[in-house]
Amino acid sequence: MWLQNGQRIDKHQPPKIDNDVELNLKGLDLDDFRDYLLAKFSRGYALQIISYITRFPNCSDDPKVISTIAPSIRGNLLRACVNLAKISQ
Image (cartoon, rainbow, N blue to C red; front, side, top):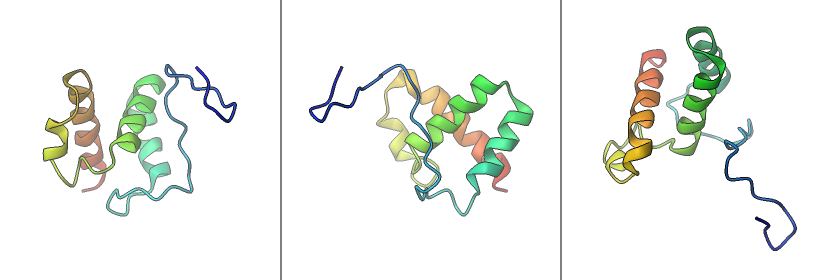
């Protein structure tokens, strides 16, 4: 699939994490969170958690947002929020 400007869209790839993007994660350093996840989980699962947190950064602030997300994503997003809560304490 291609955009009008010639860029290709790969739907099966997780979004790239841009370090310049400011996420509302309560002052959490994303690199520290990534290191914590990589130490605790497998690389694939850790990157999946990071992907969900960066795609839905406001889920930890507003739990009502989680109910609007598709059920197939909701469980993984809740697990990602739990891991975020563990490190932000």
